[in-house]
Image (cartoon, rainbow, N blue to C red; front, side, top):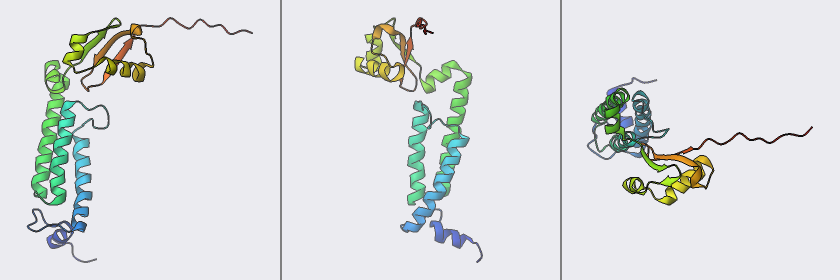
Length: 180
């Protein structure tokens, strides 16, 4: 195998900030490396893209996507892109760590839940303020609780993730008997 040099890296990846358009093979090589580094950054930053992301997670996702794509196409330097991405993930990590330790910071950066149904009654003002329609409530009832009767709902909340959670009244135990 030949000697591994900066010139070899430049041939493969097009250099840190290429002056001419990248070849397809260089973009492909950059895409593989940027993907791995982006995955590492998201894992280290403890983002919740795979679960129920909150607004702070979504903003990080959009910004990382925009930044990292520039490293792939060569429209920004690879080193600058990775430094900016690492800073974004670090700020996200600090903000979410602070949000875990302080309820008020959590409400500021992640939002808060809002009661939209109470004791089987739609709270129309809260729904309007949360941009939730009656159809949205029924959809959540169908999907989350497999019910279609609003009277069975003790409470429903628009959660920080934007989803609607349903709390049902306790149901009496099933008293069916089995014959012998």
